[in-house]
Image 1 (cartoon, helix red, strand yellow):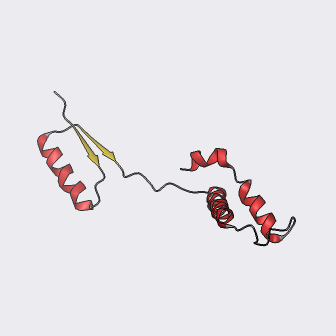
Image 2 (cartoon, rainbow, N blue to C red; image 1 turned 120 degrees about the vertical axis):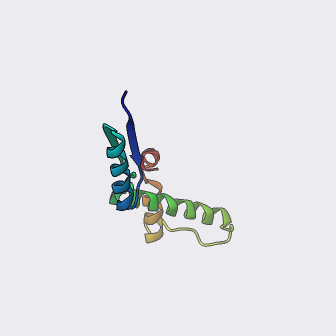
Image 3 (cartoon, rainbow, N blue to C red; image 1 turned 90 degrees about the vertical axis):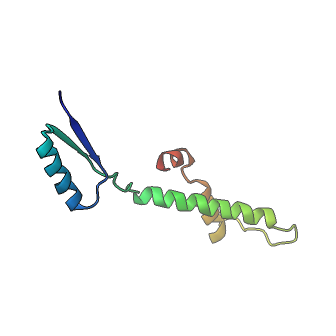
Length: 98
């Protein structure tokens, strides 16, 4: 009969050594090592897209609080261009970045 030992997420090197010695003395034929999952890499583009979507949420919250007598955002102004860029964030790919 075969005996398989699976090691998962061990941190200390002494743990590996002790388990290998024990497995060898017991005659275990297979030892599988499963490493910890690596941190997910986030590309610059996905970080930029997430920041744009957060900015768009802030703008929408500010528009809700805007009073009728407040000065409006002028078309072509820096604030208007910033709002348009934030509104054009790739919402379709946001689910893939999560």
